[in-house]
Length: 193
Image 1 (cartoon, helix red, strand yellow):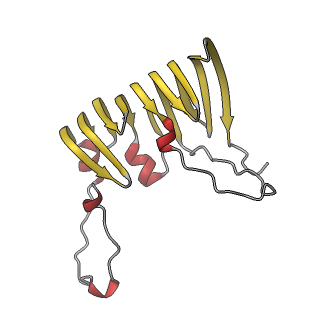
Image 2 (cartoon, rainbow, N blue to C red):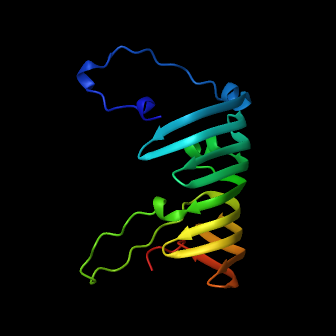
Image 3 (cartoon, rainbow, N blue to C red):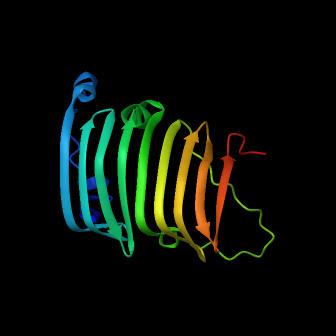
C-alpha cells in the first residue's frame, strides 16, 4: 500500500485551474460496496502483512467486516465485526461506534510496541490520550500472547472504549502456572490533572 500513499507535491507543479467537484452527501451516505480482497504479501509502512484476506460490506457510514485475516511475522490475526458512523466521525466530529472480534492463535504484541526513549529519569511520564468520540467494544480471544517478557495463554476478555476511557472487562489469562482475572479502567477525560 505504500506506493498508493500520496507523496508531498510541489505547489508550483500543481494544476491551479482544477475544477471543484461537488460532493453529494446523500449519494455518499446511501452507497454500498461488497469488498473481497486477497493478497499474498502487502507492505504498509514498516509492516509486511502476509496472506491478507478481507471480506466486507461497505457503506458510506458503516462497515460490516465478515472476515479480515492476515499475519505479520509470526503473529496471526483475524477480525470480524461492525463499525458505524465513520463518515460522521472523520468529517463532522461524530462518534464512531462498533463491536469488533479479535482472535489469534499466536500474537506477539512486542513487535507493535515502540521502545521508550532513554530519559534522565527526571521527566514526568506522559499520558496516552484515549480518543474522543469513540464508542467501540473489542472482544479478544488470543491463544498465545507475548507481551514484554510474559507468555500468556488463553487471553480472553473485552476492551470497551467510551467517553475517553478504556475499560477492561472479564479479562482472563493463564500465566506463570496459574490463571488470573482482571478488570480495570484507564481514563483520560481530565488529562490536565
